[in-house]
Image 1: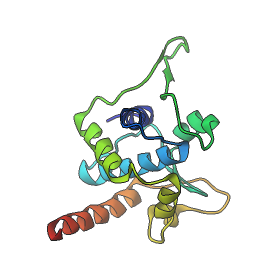
Image 2 (image 1 turned 90 degrees about the vertical axis):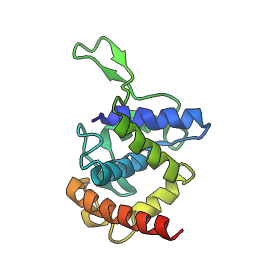
Image 3 (image 1 turned 135 degrees about the vertical axis):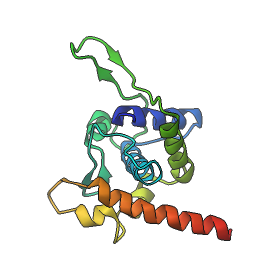
Length: 165
């Protein structure tokens, strides 16, 4: 299992390789989707070191949002960095699990062409984990069980679609 930073860096790596821009808003939505796909397909979170919260504009991974908020709505041009326990040495965390990399790649393939605004609309639909968790003025945690249940239905629908295509 990766960390929020390693998952973010995998998305940023794919973005750079493919010459596609990723904003902070898009990144946190991609991470939410990757968490859902991992919970459904791998039966475990892709990261556990941060929660996902229901904010006004959709699901957010707080640590990643705060790390990249200085980019505002501009494309992110650096990777997530962590410091050692002495606050001396920094590193750019990387995913090591091939299964986690596949989840990020799947998420990227499904949503790389979606704008941040499209992802906000998608995650705000009635019946989404965000819709059950959001309360105005609060940053409630979206429970992983709720995310998994939603993405189990998503995977079932995707399988049906692929069989009929």
